[in-house]
Length: 228
Image (cartoon, rainbow, N blue to C red; front, side, top):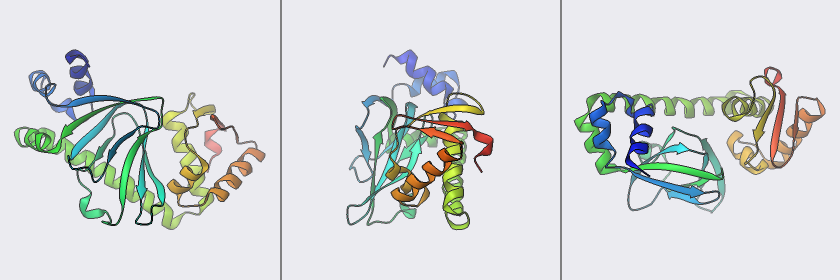
């Protein structure tokens, strides 16, 4: 990627926007930019080289693997999101691993070696504060997900998931929103802590109610306000 393109990506990113023009120019020399295709794995959590990643464009999913080799989709991440081995070591089960895999046709990622990134934070207190806030937002998002699992039934969790997906990635605003469907029913089951069979039943229930239509390639939400 050309240096000018790197500069504007970092300049516009919610994390690095606190840096001056000169600081962003200097920062361009440090990160690695990489393009991966659909179904390519971006990283494993137990890689020897620890890195902080952010998504320039595209979508990927974080898949957790337990000690028995069972895989569950943990999160779906989009442009601007951070991921990698960077804050949650103390929160993770040592018997579990995770990896990131591209789900859109193309994903462009930017990554920093953790040692380099820590030096950048030490030199830029404003950046360190912004980084802490973004990490806090992610912890809050994870906490909200756990709260939904504890206090909302599976139908509500499914409806909230579809509504959030439609608002973040769908084409359209409130009516007949089209979502490119890159998740399997099993993936969605992992995200809402349910089963594939239940997700299939819930899809059919919403379809029969006239709220959605779906195929393997897309989901149409006819009225997002009615997804409750």
